[in-house]
Image (cartoon, rainbow, N blue to C red; front, side, top):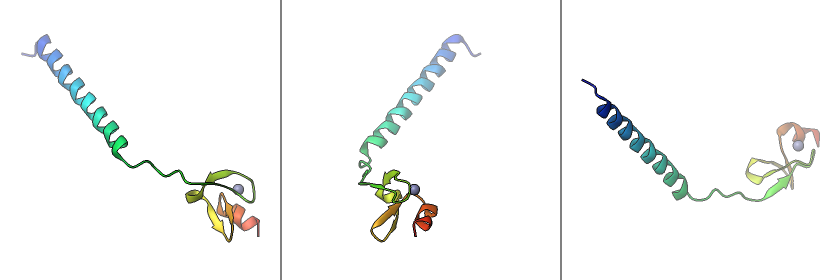
Length: 73
Ligand SMILES: [Zn+2]
């Protein structure tokens, strides 16, 4: 029979597992190398700042999207 003690016990286990999962997830994030933010560049069309790795490059200019890249030509 499932007594209140068993229930509390199960909740306790669940809580411990949940905490361990949270801790391991946090540790996972912390052990990952910090994401390189990189330089911010400006869209030559609308002036939006965005990271270089997300920007579209055309010659020596950067654009936030292909539409702006095409419009600027
Ligand atoms: Zn733009």
